[in-house]
Length: 198
Ligand SMILES: C[S@@+](CC[C@H](N)C(=O)[O-])C[C@H]1O[C@@H](n2cnc3c(N)ncnc32)[C@H](O)[C@@H]1O
Image 1 (cartoon, rainbow, N blue to C red):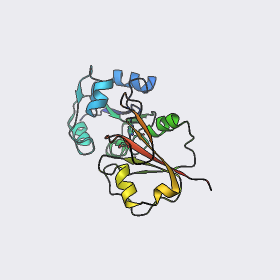
Image 2: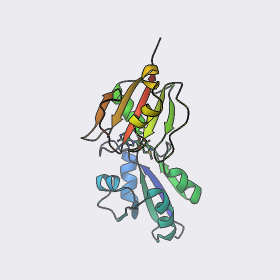
Image 3: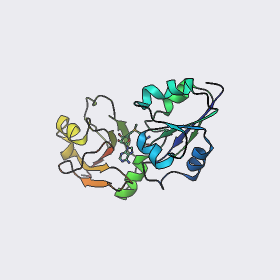
Image 4: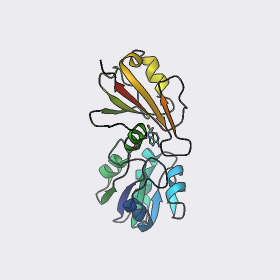
C-alpha cells in the first residue's frame, strides 16, 4: 500500500436507488472497490473490484497490499452503525466516510413508525445476549441468531412487546411480518421490539 486514500461508502439497505448521490459519485471516483458480492453487483460491477470471502478479516489485509491510490470499501446501510468501518478506520489514517441510509431507517419507514427512543443491538455474527430486552429495542439478526432463536431464548418477549420482523428491506424479496411465527428467514433481517403500552 502507498499513501492510499480510502473511502468507506455506505450503500444503504440494498436497493440501487437508496444509495446517496454522494455515495454514487464516490464509487465512480475510486480505482478499486472492495465489497460483498451483492453490493458490488448492484453498485460497482463496472469498476475494478475485489470481493473478499470474509469482509472483516480480508478487507484490511487486501488494502495493505493494494497498490491503488483510491480504494473504496462498500458497506451496507450506514457506515456508523455496526459496520466494518470501525476496523478500517482503526487500521488506516487516510479514511473518508460517506454516510448512508441504515436498514433501521428504511425499516421504520416501512412500518411508518418513529425510531427515536429505541435501543439498538446486533447479534449479527455474535453471541446471543443473556438478558431479555426491557425497553423498545431493534436487533440486527443473522440466519443463526434469527428472530425464532431470540424468541426461544426469551419466550416472554411476545407478551412484553409488539414484534415486527423486517427482511430484505428495499429489495424485491422484502418482507414485513407482525409477530414471530410466520416470517421469511433471510440473511438480512431486523427485529423490532416495540414496548406494549399499558
Ligand atoms: C453488519 S450489519 C450492517 C448494518 C448496516 N450498517 C446498517 O446501517 O443497516 C448487517 C445487518 O444489518 C441488517 N441489514 C442490512 N441490510 C438489511 C436489509 N436490506 N434488510 C434487513 N436487514 C438488513 C441485518 O440485520 C444484517 O445482519
